[in-house]
Length: 260
Image 1 (spheres, rainbow, N blue to C red):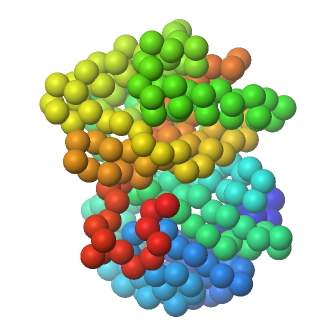
Image 2: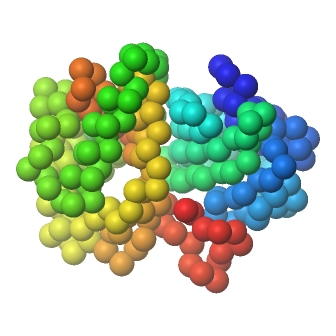
């Protein structure tokens, strides 16, 4: 791991899993700490304020970093959390910006609840974890950027086979089946229910080797959502997908700049 990934991981493990919130936030952040996590104020004191309460409520914390990538100054992590002996279970996707000293200066996250059963039979976190094909990083980022623009933002579903493998597309969204057919069935189901999912804005695309992640604003029915989509690619095509989505907080709930 590099220093920036070490710092992001340590903030999670030492600050949250091990319960040393103040020591970790002071050790691993830079001159500022701009926060986009729902309910958490900016800065050291905002982090401590939120997590002191969290730590008191959840004395048992099994937290594991499942996947991580880094791209320039940015780090992305997919994390599983089982709290109080499995009383509640969550999947978190986090993005960190870092300064010239590799200290964390800004943080975004999306938190979604663990689901025990899925349409595909895959869990929200299983599957490949190894970062490979480092020489293909930029090409893979370009594939995902075009996929997000064509298919997710502009709704050109007929172009999906340009970007997604027709032979292997492993799906970890618990509501969606494997393959392009699974995506189509899910989108049809949502449209028939009057809650089609439409992507409105692409905030960031990060990649390292065979893994690329997008962070977007989407709309499902009347709800605005922050969505991380994590893709694994092989031979220039998307072959595996994980995601996390969270409703945007209402204006009266905002304590920071919001999810974006």
